[in-house]
Each structure stands twice: as C-alpha cells, then as structure tokens.
Amino acid sequence: MKNEEYEVLDIEGGSPVKMWTRGVPVEAEAKQQLSNMAKMPFIYRHVAVMPDVHVGKGSTIGSVIPTLGAIIPAAVGVDIGCGMMAAKTTLTANDLPDNLGPLRSAIEKAVPHGSSPQLRGKRGRDEGSWHSPPQPVDAAWATLHEEFDAICAKTPKLKNTNNYRHLGTLGSGNHFIEICLDEAGAVWFMLHSGSRGVGNAIGTYFIELAKQDMRAHFINLPDQDLAYLAEGTQHYNDYIEAVGWAQKFARTNREVMMHNLIAAVRTVIAKPFATHVEAVNCHHNYVQQERHFGKDVLITRKGAVSAREGELGIIPGSMGAKSFIVRGRGNAESFNSCSHGAGRTMSRTEAKRRFTLADQVKATEGVECRKDANVIDEIPMAYKDIDAVMLAQRELVDVVHVLKQVVCVKG
Image 1 (cartoon, helix red, strand yellow):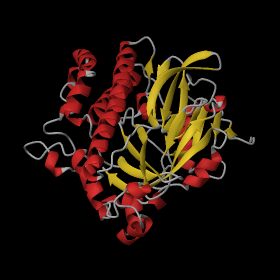
Image 2 (cartoon, rainbow, N blue to C red; image 1 turned 90 degrees about the vertical axis):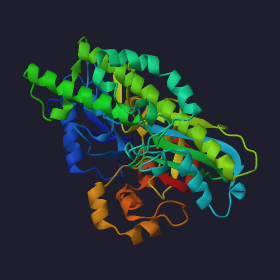
Image 3 (cartoon, rainbow, N blue to C red; image 1 turned 120 degrees about the vertical axis):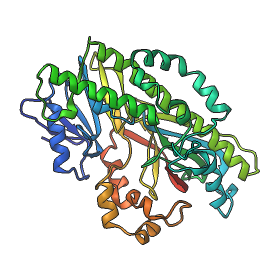
Image 4 (cartoon, rainbow, N blue to C red; image 1 turned 120 degrees about the horizontal axis):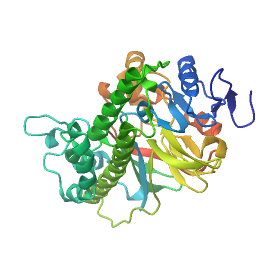
C-alpha cells in the first residue's frame, strides 16, 4: 500500500512498517529485519523507516522503534548516543588559508582520533585517547563522574573502561570532524562521534544480559539480537539509568571536541571570529521517552534524528558529499524523525574490494583529507545518493543550510 509520503509494509502477525524510502533502494535483508522487528509484541502502532535504511545488528539502521513495556538494547546499539554537532562561525570562505593542510594538522593534534600516536598511553595502547587529559576534559568529567560511580556500584565491570580518557576524543570508523562552507560561504565546524569505549561497554553488557533473560525464560526470537529487557525488572531499570548516562557522555564528548576544535582553528587563523552562531547537538543512536498519539512510549532511534516541528538537526552526506542542516516538520507518522545520513549501500569489506585508492582520491577532490587505503571503505560511492535520500523525506524536514566540506579529519 502506498501514499504520497511513504510506503506501508503490512507484516503478517506484526505491526505495520511505514517507509519513507520512495526513490531509494532498500535491500531484501533490510526488509527481513524490519519484518522481524515489527513482529515483536511490544511495538507501539508501527515501525517508522527512514530513507537511509540498511542492514544493522538485529534491527536496521535508519529505524524508529516505538515500544511499550520493553526495550531492545541491541536496537540502541553499542555506539550509544552517537550523533552530530555543528556550529556556524562568523568566518567566511575568504578567511580560510589557501593551504588547508596546516589547518587539518592542527585539528588532528588537538582532538585524539583513530590512531593519534602522540596521545597514546605509555605502552602505546588506547590509541585515540588522552594520556594526560587537558583542563576542558577535567571540567566536563566533573559533571559526569558521580552518576557514573553510582552506575558502577551496581555494575562494577564498567568501572575499568576508558571513560575519562575517551572524553573529548573522536574514535574511528565513520566518525569525523569537518570544516564546511554553506551556500552563502559561511564557515561551519561539524563533527560526528558518540560515547566511545564506555558506551560500547554499557551496550555490550546489557545486550548480553537481555540474551540471558531470553534464555532463562525460554523466549524464542527471530533474531537473538532482538533480545529485550522487560519493564519492571532490575535489568531494565539499570539499563535505563546506564543508557541515559551514556547519552549524556556522548553529548558532552561532542561539546569538548568542539571546544578543542575551535581552539585549534584559532592557532592557524589569526582573524578573530565568533562561533555557535547557529549550533546543533543531536543524537542519532539513542532511546528516550516521548509522547506520541496520546501515549508515553520509549522511542529508539537507530540511525535516525529527532525532527520535531521547528527543531534543528544535521543530516551528513558521505565523505566528499554535501551535508544538510535541517528543521523538523513534526511529522507525527514518523514519530517526529528523519534520517541520520545517506546510509551505506555496501559493507566496508565490499567497498575496499570494489574501489581503489585512485577512486578515493578522485571522489574527494577539493577536500583536504586523508587519501590512503585505510579510508577507502568511507568512499562516497559506498553510500546512497544523499539527494535521493533528502527527496524521499521532504515531508519530514525542511533544508535550512547546505554544507560542503573543505577539510575532513577521519577517525
């Protein structure tokens, strides 16, 4: 069944699936995952699917999953609170140096990422983490550690994670920092990261607890990664507390990185400038309670962004493609949501098999970024067409700014 906005998949024995994917390909494996999710007995009304949807662990990335009385830790995932932050500055394109290499180098030194060798631990471990965290990290951790200590009192194994030393660091994979220009030539700073090692530890721990609960109660699932925690149980309560803290850590992590990014740019560009002229800090892997259709429900956005009426959000394209600052239209059927990006069309392994370094260099022409074999998996051709994705969700968001990156630091 179709209407002008979305396609509806009627799932036998399950809730409907509403898909904002017109004009965007969706693989059969993703549709099977959506069917599995829709058959879970605690889905509220329907599952909403964004145009960047693709196969994930247990459930598709690009999904909005409303639940009553239960939560699926693997649907939230292990990169808890992963999301975006963007800030407009008073700089313009003419204020940027002709050679952007020193600007990228300054950012790479200021924000630990991927394999930052100068910031490793004494024995070369914990790449991309602080050895001696600077004052902004100390100040940010002071707002987080008491709640974290209370969580660790219940779950001691979380205590020995790289929580403090990962605060203000980028990570690896598809995480990035960019300097962009909007349609008027204004300079924006943008970054993508989440809760790092501590979020991974929290997610992994509670995913396994959920699986243990399923085995203990002889509950059969179409996919073991749909294992859930039932409301009213201790595991559920502990997870809600821990996941909420991880999301707070992720938001703070982006704020610390933005602070250090701005400071790094000021070491290269002498002209005084203001930042946060327009600023957005939004999750796209998270869960929170919201009110929809007259009922308080848990909304899990797995690769999706909140798009309430008037709310600003960020939809990044792939490395070398444009990104968008958007304003939500408050579309009730989507549970006030939009996509979190372009969405992959192939695995990282397939991208490395199919494309060459020469392809990567050509695809990122005009962008000051890494151009080596280790980032081929992030080549723009491994992602869906961002213009098609935006067209498919024209009823979910309005475009406020179109950004094109000129500097990109990959994790």
